[in-house]
Image (cartoon, rainbow, N blue to C red; front, side, top):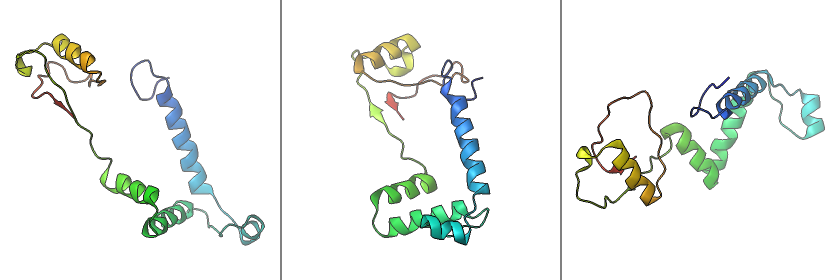
Length: 130
């Protein structure tokens, strides 16, 4: 069963399974004083694992860890949108181009985009992709 992703991509379901397993593990994880001493880990009460992890990410970011800083930024603000300018080889305004014309121009530029299949009869407003 395909739970997400592009049609024909069966990896969407496995991503949900992994999410569910991680969510369950984080919520149920506990580490007693004896286990913590044995494994060299801090004690963690059930339901507090994710908060402890988040606290460590914040501490690492404050210590200058660039990966931790990026993770915080991506989680709090979302990943930055990437845009690409493409050149149209003829002088036809993009509003007058057919989907096939646009696809041909994108293929010639080496660009790869996905379309939202739920939106029909959408007209392109600009040659700038986000």
